[in-house]
Length: 526
Image 1 (tube, rainbow, N blue to C red):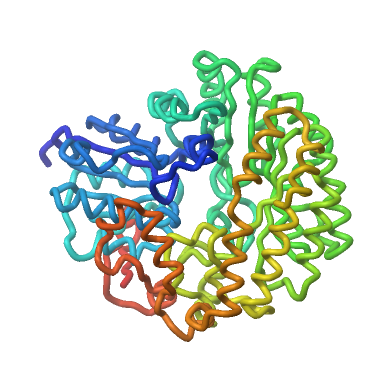
Image 2 (image 1 turned 45 degrees about the horizontal axis):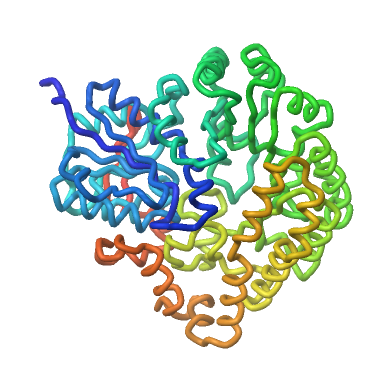
């Protein structure tokens, strides 16, 4: 085989749904950068190619002169950014560029993504990147879908990714997070989570020490954001690695972890080692107790236990975000929502984040059952961010009941009184300012109130949510059009709709898009 020519490769990390000028977005969007697009950029350079990297935060020009200076385009996207990814791919493909989609959307919706790209990536390592750059086969009909049989055993560290990290955090005006990861996959089995099906895999501790040592030579008191789905599963090992590499007071950390790992002994150790932010998942008052160390209690008993636990964490770590999922099948009546309001009152220092139950294609174990039960709606990808729309019909509520209750909780958390209580309870001006700006700039209450009102009064919206009509209500169409800005005109034909049951249909399909898995049998999808 002849050597691969030196190619012009562009890697774009889409961290937002489209153009934006919001103050909070300008402040925080650069800090939402993903690790895998940076890893892909490193691998492309190691394979001998010239790489341009862009973290798209909502202001950058990614469809101008960059198009003519690109042979192969890699895009990383969450589902909320799918339409922007589709539009960008459309622009590049018309100019002869080979386009590749990776990230959570590609893994969750490979069938739909395959319509608009030449390659779609599932689990990805350097082998898959090399194969694409060697083949570079345009696919006018359906993309080639490539997936490894597991996560890569290692990823390029902060030292190797530094020039891409540096260019990204330079866009953040004040708070600057450096993305790192110590493990992949998750030991828990929450059936709504994309990481639950991936075995927990710790990464090399020597590399982590090297990354931390390197960052100390580049940034004064850097803030590291650990991207582990559940940080600290092997708590002593990772903390020992941090302690051996970072002198006291030289670095700060933020991580997502479970309350079951956050014993007071562990929390005190986190504090000693510079952890300033923790994001534990509570999920529900009636299930998923293994993550919150409450497997034997539910309801009001769990509320009291969890509130005391979170207040203990807050006494040591200034920033705590508690994550809830609204609309789970285990919830019924007003009690789950009332318990959440009480939690907010009992734990005023924590910032409560509410995700609407969302079925992301192939992402989670429960999605096949939901599709079999005809409970998944074809809500456009633009709204699938766990906040702007719930695409699963509630099991124990009417839509009007559910949204009225969800609005009540959001209003309780984001009211002037709620913001004031949180401000007074928080320690440190960084935490106070971040929580204040985040709550004060939130449009959640207004948006969800508008949806609740339409469900009560607009037949077309109610029929859409009940699955009686597939015609997208004007309210949602106008939101997409205004949100995409210039990308709207580049959106490929048919991109606004998708088959919400594609995963289910693929189980019995015998023909379709080839999925090449190195070292494994060929799989097909429709």
